[in-house]
Amino acid sequence: MDDSDTEDLRNYTPQHSHWLVCPLSLFLCLVILFGTRFTFEPPPPRSEPQYVSVLPNQTTRQMKVACIGDSITVVGSNWSMNYPSQLQRLLGEAYSVQNFGFSGMTMMKNGLCWDDHSEPAVNCSYWKTRKFAWALQNLPDVVTIMMGTNDAKHINFDTEPPSWGEALCPGCPVQGHGNSFEQDYLDMIATFRTLPNAPRVLLGIPPPYFPPFPWNFSSRVINERFPGPDGIIRRIGQLANVDGIVDTWTALGGANSTQRRELYGGHCGSQTETCTADGIHPNDAALARIAHEFAVAIQALPMPLNL
Image (cartoon, rainbow, N blue to C red; front, side):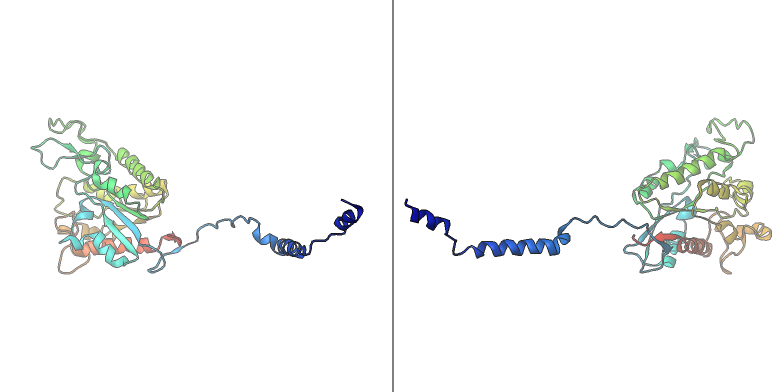
């Protein structure tokens, strides 16, 4: 290679170098102008859920209501007239009300049934039923609990007589003065609150006990110890800090001493049918009053909007 060739190489300039320079310049300009658009921005922090009273069409799904109870939750002239069914009609399509009532059951974990004294007493605790398990699996948004009537039977609540001496009912009574009732009730409330959706809990004061006072219930417990501002149910509600107390006892005439002496409770919701069918189980009109009281309490509950 001679000197002229070397000079030619030094002076050589690629004829198409602008095709390399322009794309690179354009890319650098885009990065400078819009580079911040491609940087990672963390999502904004989630705000706390807002709580308002729920009305129909304000939720993205039906709110589930689980009704826990005994035969008073089950009974009705037909399946459409028990109080959960009437509650469903009052609340409307925004809610799905499920009846988890089980006749004859107690809140006490060791509560007994002994209606037929010719047969041995057996455990009748709601805790041991499939209905309780199903209610937990249902993951309700609201839980209504109205129990205590069967706990108020003499074999479960009373302390007198001190020794029953009944071979078919060993250990009667199970617990005196309701100490076990209160603790077991608190345990059930806590059990529902451990569910991942932390449901709202409402307690219902059991309805009044009227003449002819059937099935060996204690009138003193049902009509004196359960209800009232200082009654057992409100005390449990205060200890558990529940979301509301539904006073079905007063709604069905429990506070009316004259009505409490009337056969089957007189007329507490209808002029054509008595308040109860037998002194303890409400008739349809009385069940409508129970449903109304629960509906008012449920509709007043604050609920998260993002259901």
